[in-house]
Length: 470
Image (cartoon, rainbow, N blue to C red; front, side, top):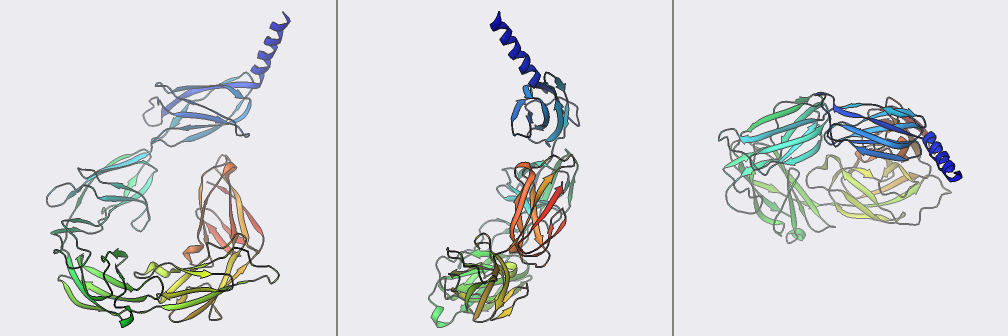
């Protein structure tokens, strides 16, 4: 009898400290039940329990810890949703969820004249206008078909990679350019998608005629027998191990302005040259490129705080060409804190890239031959000595991200943009972690903007606290 009473007492205590939750998940537009949706309940301690809805959309979670819980519903191609509930010991709480289907864009790409599909080409989807960056890509199927699912409401743009039919000879003296050539086609309209909308796109693209540009290379004698790389605009053209002398031909060139660049030589001791050509309605001959030797750069680091020793590990400084002009590339000045060196760098403007500095150090300024660059690109037109001035007392921005209901958001994307410089290497990206926490360490003092958020001022050696609502 005593054992039975103890069992009954334990069961009563358990019922007083746990609760139950049940409900139904439906489509917000059709009101139909949704099976295979996952419902998860979690508390502040990180304890979680989940269930998958049945065909009738129903779910049930038993033995939940009493107190405040966050309930989240997720299903592929649907927008997840959350709710905060309070469950008392022994209580059964019922709550139904309506979730919105995410939008979808699908379609087919065909030739305007022949109505034939264009298979096996890459298609890009951009969120926003034509100048936005692609955020996803797909491959056209055998019937020129494509599909992008799980989209948020908003404006989208579709683009194709340059397409060709036949052989495009990006090399030396091969067969003539193809019968058909498609430029970087863009769907002519901005596609506006509403919540859960399913859009079909019938996309017809037209071929255009392409032309040939013939160039000769006249490199200095010391470079004539060295390997050569050639760029057409921003495309690296394979040259099959050819040397920096003689004539080459680029085929499949669409009408418009083109830059053709040559880099002759090995990793160090290179020579650079380029020409700009306007392709109109005929082939272009007798273009000449005369490469000239690159510049040599030396450098060193200087720590602003005189009593701070340099870190033990070696470091290097990076140089990123402004605008990524064809024929130039990211350069590295290798060495130690007191001696950096690079040879044969292409003349032009560069941003300093200090992304590999040891933690706790941040670039403050760059001196070109003893003169401050003042936050502007470094112009390398001859032999140069660079001093990278760093501080051991950088600033930090830290905070949390919450939704409108003050629920912490994990995995929220944050982009930090400095107002004091247009240097793209200084743009930072991160994601919020557990509890919505995020941090941007090792920052140069100055003003910053969190994209889609607020403006923040960072002071030397201090932490600026920011709490965001998304």
